[in-house]
Every structure is written in C-alpha cells, then in structure tokens.
Image (tube, rainbow, N blue to C red; front, side, top):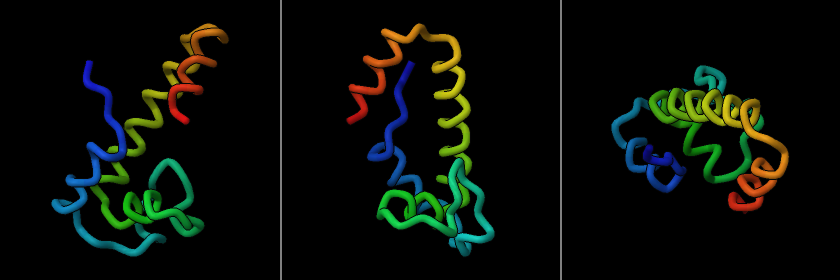
Length: 78
C-alpha cells in the first residue's frame, strides 16, 4: 500500500481548480487555515478531497490499532 504524504500530493494541486477557502471543504476548517500546507490544500478542490480521504483512512487506522502501535505511528509523523 502506497502512503500518501503531503509532499506527494502537492503536485496534484496543479491539476485542481482554484476556489475560495469558504467554498472548499477539507478535513479541517479552510477559513482558519494559516500554514502553507493547509492553504495549499484549501486552494484545490482535488487536494481537499484527497485530504478528506486521507483523514477517513487515518481515523480507521486509529480505531483499529492498539495504543502502543498508535503511539509509534504518531511519533513517526513528527
């Protein structure tokens, strides 16, 4: 299974359409986006949809993973 990371997804933003933050729904509130990464996701409908898919998959992994393994996963993301 290929892991989707933000650096892998950013080139896909070029194919997305530009819309305002209040028109695009990601897994977080785009109106409150302050980081470059979040603003990039919120600038592309395509990236926002991928962000939602990633958030759903991550939630599923969190629900199906024991606490020790989950701590390892979280630590590897920092």
